[in-house]
Image (cartoon, rainbow, N blue to C red):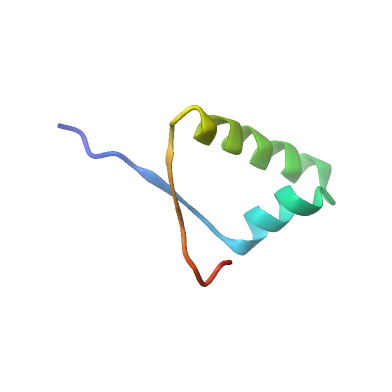
Amino acid sequence: MPRKRALILDTKVILRFLLGDVLELYEKVYRVFQRVEEGEPEVLLSDVVL
């Protein structure tokens, strides 16, 4: 069985989404979060990031 890959999100990714200050990066992050809502990919977020 193939092993699932997970995305590891860092602080910069979360900030680009929340702030929306750099439109190009916001759009990329938005698309990633849309895929996450659909169930792929699995995401890891360290409590240190929060």
